[in-house]
Image (spheres, rainbow, N blue to C red):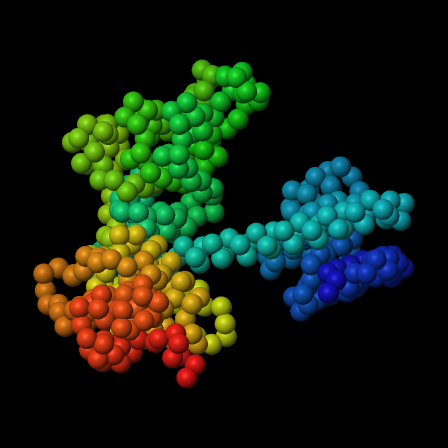
Length: 459
């Protein structure tokens, strides 16, 4: 559907002619002969652009602009008049008009239509950007950090306070635990949420590129530096800079961070001019930086500057009670068909016995695998990824409390039976010999564990 334009002019001939011209160009047109009438129509109808005259008896064009900005701040308004002055144009633009156009319009019809299309395109881009911003802020809201375990609840309490401050934050945890999600959630729930968010992977930068990438460089600073270029710190000015994998930065390169963290100022490579930056720093690492300091791999003075506020994200094996919640979240996130995908309780119980070295990221991959290969809309043990069945993985037990030993033993037995059946091409005789049991015992176990044999599935 073509965009709708509200045209406002108290001169009937001018109103009709302009409305007709825009209609001939394919636009939907709503006309109003007075400012108050236009304001009511702007409230009642979905309008993408307003084109209004300045001089009208009840509500002039500038006042109409201000009234519209109160109800729809992002609605572009083009002001037109036959009595234009420079001061009037400046005032209209200062009040927020998209453009100030002098009548008669028809002397510059092509230019006028070009400006109309530019205004509509700008509004569409701003709406898309707003939708994207809302989507991103929703994605990184606290409810999307899944966890009921006490360790996660403690993190939620910390995040509430951390978001209210502007201090540097250190987030530590194994790979795949969700450090990036937490870092971005801090930004999008802080007063800097509408300012830039810039991420840089420090571990991927060579020593020669580190300073240039972070602080920028001036023209001629090195071979290939053909123009002045800003760095990540300048790009994040006013917002947040996430420094990923800080623990991978070599010891001799770590000193470049000290001045900018302490004084919030920097010098681009090849320049002697100091620049001030207003940036909140969030650091993530899969290393224990305190231990790295003790081992002589990380500067102690840098560690103290980075760890003003510190969060340690627990690995999945230390909050295994959250696994059902995470699986349910990923099932809803990754399902593609109209019917919801469910999972057998036995699968959940088996997954709770695994150590998950890849943490939440590995779990997300496993759920995607099972959704893709499950038959129907219910995930069974047969749908588990081979990587979760092959080889004996350490069982994970939360703390030193009670465990379900019969379930762990049953899952282990089922895993090996399934593995050997697959290895033998589903030949029961050969599989039973490899498992050290009779064929009858194997058949009993196949029935017990509801293992589906490919050659028998269609019978």
